[in-house]
Length: 269
Image (cartoon, rainbow, N blue to C red):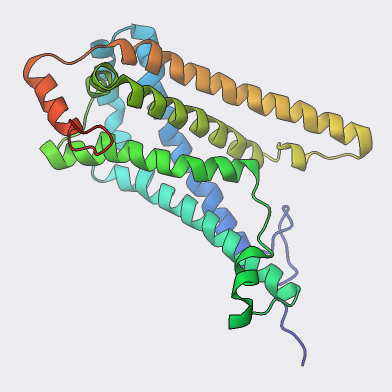
């Protein structure tokens, strides 16, 4: 019997069939990252650049109030943050599963019960560096959102400010520094390498042959890592250099923050 083709031959500039599942999943993953990047840029401005400029946590709060409606309101937050995150992560996972199944079909992999073990270990696509960073970033981002968005809303129905973060650094420095260092570092490198991929600038996307291509690959690797390190440094400069030194909140506000942090298992009492 004649086998049905896996996809039509019509392709775009990237060599991906316009009618294929891979094309649409890749498009979802790509364009959802555009939306989340816009949020990420505003978030870096709020949490790092403005504190660096003002050198004051209280003085930076008013700038958060100016931009928060664009990503923190009940209408905007799902569209700018929640949906793009889910779309980006789930489409990426679906791509890996779909490509694995294509590989299995192409190479005659059996799906029988006797081959269950080989089904799960063979033919998985290579996990790139940007994907590895992404899978590490997901739990860190989820934890950040739970601690800074979900739990405060459950407790008092409102969003937190930079003083809430400063309070955490003052009262729980080890957890705060470790958590934010991992979140900022991994997030910056994942997003920078992700944009390099969309712009066709990763080392594996370099053109040419032989020594010329190897030189281009090395140059691109240095440039991408340099940009990622610069973004990380800028973000940490404001977060650690200003916000982390803001100190504990006084009086009733500080007690409210303490009550919220007691709801976090890894912080506890």
